[in-house]
Image (cartoon, rainbow over all chains, first blue to last red):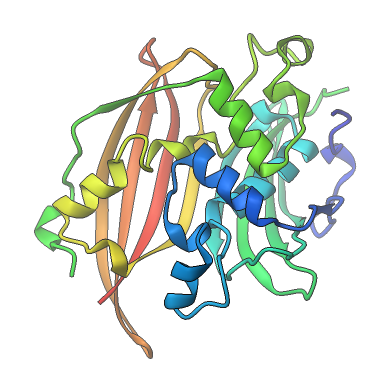
Length: 144
Length: 149
């Protein structure tokens, strides 16, 4: 999985490499329901979703947060991740292709570490934002 | 409407056993093939004692497996059909590994009423502190739940 992003060479405003996911599938929503214990039928039963005025099932917000978590620990070592926060913004439907991007918003030296703050976003193929968030990394400066 | 006299209310501490297969199931659903979450030798090569839990593993600590959300919504008099998940935040203070038994301490941190053009809302912040079997505080979660009034 390594190499991770080298934050020594990154500056505030720099983007991390965007992670694009495969299209969301209904099977994936069922699997995520089982894995997470979120059994709300809005995510698995089209008839229930349509009764609620939607065109069909929508993805669980935390699944999209999971996509962002996947991207983050591709960019940084899990142990260096100190905080991760998201705000759910939009609905994701089967077929949507989610891409996860992030930008460095703060970089501060703190002893033997860099404290890095990044803004992150998950968008679909039309550029519609599904969630925004931020994460904080404590990055050891001597990381090879 | 959430019962504001219940700000500060705590759920009885509940337990969550961390299971290797459950982590694998979650990563399969997300489509995350990062080997450190399923291959102990790969995790060890990165200096972990075992495969660490991925950043969003803890999401499952609130849903039907534990019933924590349902129980606290009941305590707060919040009807389930009015509830939206607004924000979620995790603070990581240590690693969580398969076999760990997490002691989950959920409380209602605040309830704030907000007027919007589409109606009034209650913003309910739930906090959960997770300590492991060695009494180390490994994670703090904060969920912002929106109740449409």
